Length: 146
Image 1 (cartoon, rainbow, N blue to C red):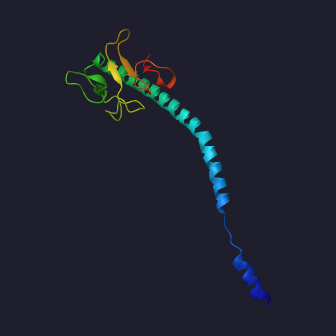
Image 2 (image 1 turned 180 degrees about the horizontal axis):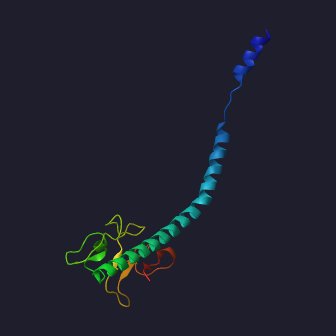
C-alpha cells in the first residue's frame, strides 16, 4: 500500500517552470539587451573607423611600392586598380601590390576616392566615413591618408 501511495504523489509533482517564471526571465534578458546594445553598436562603429584607417595606411604603403617600381604614382584615371592590375602604359610593374585586388572599399562598402596628384601631396585616398558626406565629426568624419 505504501508503494501505490508513493506512485500517486510522484505522478502529481510536475517539474518545470511556470509561465510567470519564464516571463520574468525574458524580461531580465530584454533589459540586459536594451542596456548592452547601444554600447555594442558604438564599439562596432568605432571598429569600422579603425579598420578604414588601417586600410588607407596599407593602400598608401602599396602606392609607395608602386612608386618605387614605376617612378610615378597611378593617375586618377588609373586609380587604385593599378595596384592589382598592370596598367597598359607601365614599362616596369612588379605587382600586384595588394592582395584581393579590386576590393578597394571602406568598412561601409563604399569605394575609396583616389586622386593623384592631390593638392599638397602626391596622392590622396579618401573615405567619406559613415555618413558618406563631405565633412563630419566623430564616426562621420572623413578619413584621408596623411
